Length: 264
Ligand code: NAD
Image (cartoon, rainbow, N blue to C red):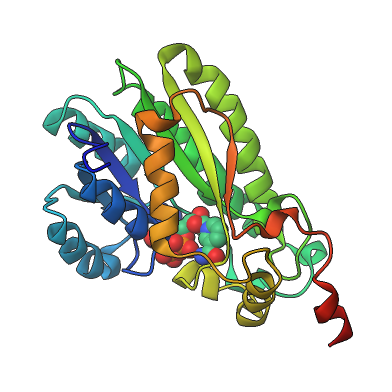
């Protein structure tokens, strides 16, 4: 099964460090032959992302803050110059003010609502539009979402709305880009202990609860998330688009914890 991504070139957006979901996916794709470019947000992260990219033989490592659309344009201009075409994109970017990832949703400020939506949702549409222009022969894109888009969860607050909108945008983008042979899907990951994950109030306790009460009774690994990216970005999933694909040890199918937990 090695070599599924041989000859394919892709952009990875959202690596902050070696715990990042995007990093787990990048490693799997590179192991299957993909050639990768990376973006990083700000010089502080450059110090972490550049050596990681080098370890996968990638020297295309570009700054990009999605709040600055000129920096997004610059990334795609560079890809056009260096590669001409693109086969796939991973968008693993999310942000909301930490102070509003605790307490009640009803207290969300207008400024943070807009900022969260632009960074965590609309940036995927802006990226998809630019990436699609470099995919004349078709391609595939994925973004990262979380089950609190469909059900309310304490503290996730406005991020839950952003993820719901992101999943809806995946369906609309899939319809827009399907005629060009470009597939668009979301991976809904179970809890992973990353920088973004740690920003959510009480995340340790909530993540532990979800892992314990999932059908598999455990969390998911970066390797498992990498496997889902390999599936959705390779020809293995050629007929799949517009989907939200859960990689969460099955937690999304559970309505109640196991009976033993209720007695405890
Ligand atoms: P992470 O902190 O490693 O990655 C988040 C990334 O978003 C970072 O690389 C950060 O630089 C980037 N980012 C934030 N604002 C940005 C901006 N303005 N411009 C460019 N980049 C920006 O955490 P992660 O958990 O790997 O997060 C990746 C994605 O996975 C996010 O969309 C997150 O919501 C989603 N997700 C995470 C979990 C989890 O439990 N960790 C579960 C489901 C979905």
